[in-house]
Length: 136
Image (tube, rainbow, N blue to C red; front, side, top):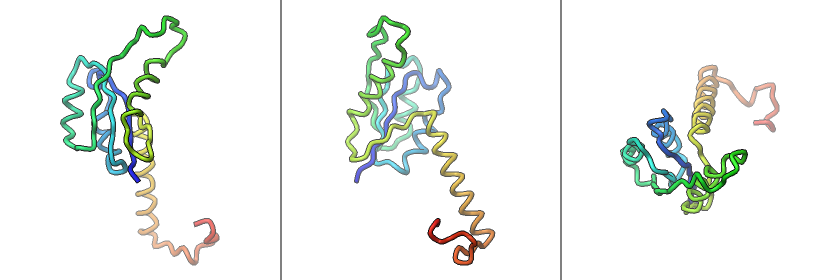
């Protein structure tokens, strides 16, 4: 099974997004990571390519911000960019990984690691635990 992750981005450095760290943190659990990259006025593309991992695929896109004249309808361009990234994924299982969510994923993984270390340090014996084994 091949797992794909994807996101969309534009002017990541200028806006101060931790996109390089986010992409690197998700790479251990995906087989490919697709970035739909809009036109940038900074070095975002160079930073992404600087990751140096062949699993990271950059798809250059254009952002048509005038596609909807109704300013009350927001997120249309984001949805369009997300669809472009998703369409370019080749995995059997595809996961949308946005920059803001990768921090959450990283903190959950770190919490699991810390909990496992705590169990090891405390020498918890699951067989003699008062919790039923069915819950483990």
